[in-house]
Length: 138
Image 1 (spheres, helix red, strand yellow):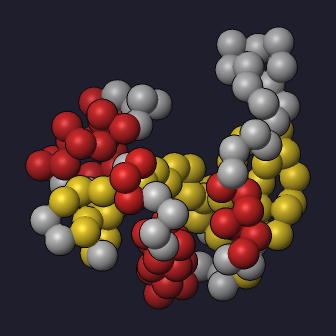
Image 2 (cartoon, one colour):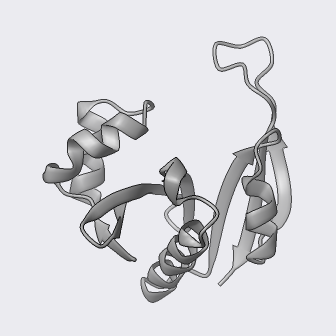
């Protein structure tokens, strides 16, 4: 497995997965190097996107692994690689989140993430189950 910074050549793949961004958002990921494509051999199998909150806290706002590659350790390896890159860049802690009805929370806890809060968007245009946040000191 290899993780590479997203490039314009990855646009179709990334945008087929991430329905939250538009052309401008994708261009920003390329420019800021805040998006990655996860490769297995010559296959694009997933993506990661992050931002940096308050100029000092990397927040992974998306990790997606194609269905046929799930439960094979790719997400774990990708997250650990991302954490190492954030540490290399000088960050001291990372933040990650998932909805309470998603299974990813179990993986995050196994990787040493600690619950640290949540957001509720009931009765808003962004209505969804509670978003749980996790933190990890690098």
